[in-house]
Image 1: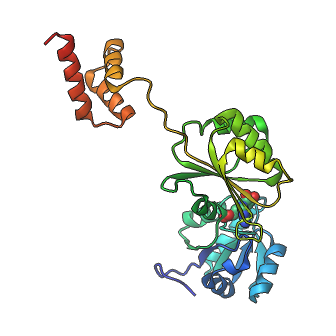
Image 2: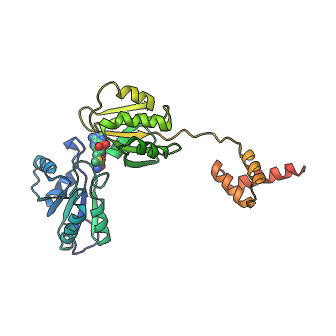
Image 3: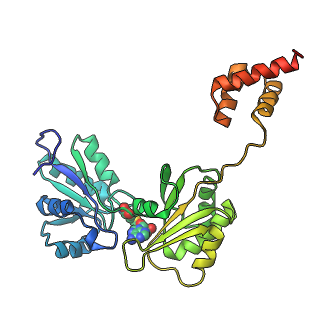
Length: 288
Ligand code: SAM
């Protein structure tokens, strides 16, 4: 079997997404590829055996997880070089996304072995798509740190973030994490918490972080969680464009061109607009 791409004696590494809770989310193509390849590298072979039994997949499994990925990678790349077709799966969702796999993929890319994605569920994209938060620009930063001090330091980076920020979080850490969001970003920051995607108790919470704390403090938080921070409110610049121009021209000995560039960037204007303002200011100060 080989799907697309140039002919090569190497095999292909298929990065296959699997369900994140609801087995009906398995794609037809994922089942076919997993049945057809010579070997499936799985994060936890016992876990994947259940998926295999459900879909009648009998392909041999080998483990490929965080602590053996480096050495297992050599073995798998050798097999791919011999022309074997291999699929990579994780316990749930898309491999290599906060899951093992990126090292193996990197090695294959470096070795000139074709890697092909068999797309399917990922908690990050599913949560983002149903969150109601802006989706035109977003960043995904995996798991936040488990220790509060390090988590707060990381959260500081989102004070002025203009993209929706997506994180994975463990249920037993959600309240502590929300308290740290209040401490670093203030209690009014808007967010979404998506819990148990695709499962019976799927839940979307939308509101401020203070409201989230109140909501989730009511009972023990259970299940799998994606936390999404809304973009920061845009703050009105303290000065008008003219004031900023006037101050910078008086304060700095930088060339006019540099000042214009800086102000244009800060206020989202074109260089020629700011240049026209600078000329006006100069004329004004010369009493013309
Ligand atoms: N590779 C996976 C993916 O593509 O979604 C993510 C694996 S990561 C180790 C597991 C984390 O993803 C969980 O701790 C949780 O934060 C999030 N997650 C996975 N399944 C989820 C679900 N059904 N609902 C909400 N979050 C989920």
